[in-house]
Length: 253
Image 1 (cartoon, rainbow, N blue to C red):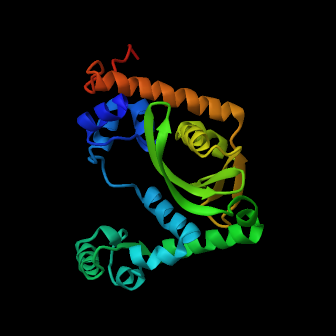
Image 2 (image 1 turned 120 degrees about the vertical axis):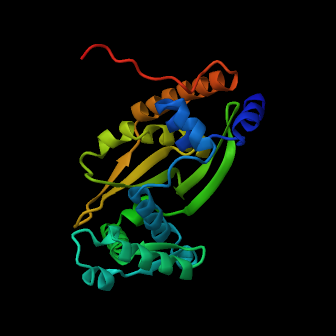
């Protein structure tokens, strides 16, 4: 509990997540900002991922959280190469946001793309084979003395599955170490106690080619090593022995 107590006292949170661990590896300043909730709002890619996951795993909750809007008519009426950055469009969007309350909005084209992607998954049989079980299951537990929190996309019979969108299913193997998906695989497999961890990756361009990847022992071990390396960095930070004001000094180029 010492780690959790120090984490709470310094960051205001008594747990870490896959995302915070990933930031700790990249830059402790990013970790600090993330824990304080001061990072910039999520990117368009992450926003689409949230819509896609909700429609895939909990479609009954979609209308509680989102409103689909079609801006094609107003775009057609704006004489600009980039109508969505014009004052007219921004004013229209602002008025629309006031009308929908606390819900977020999603472009009709993005909504339709998510539906088409999910339909493709269903047609391949991937959902029946790799994505059947309990969905969006929250966990709040410990790995060793480290408190971890997150959500399983799908807890199946003997496996955990996480959905990802990607530019290329053939190149997804390179995304795993690049974006720290191996850390996520280690955490989720360790917490769940399941035998296997799968990524179901899908391209966001037609025909929305999907792919299934099982996390290998090598990927899990790499995620393990990254996780504990990040934890040690966070421990140093909590003890006051790790500055967040570091910068990179390049050699001559």
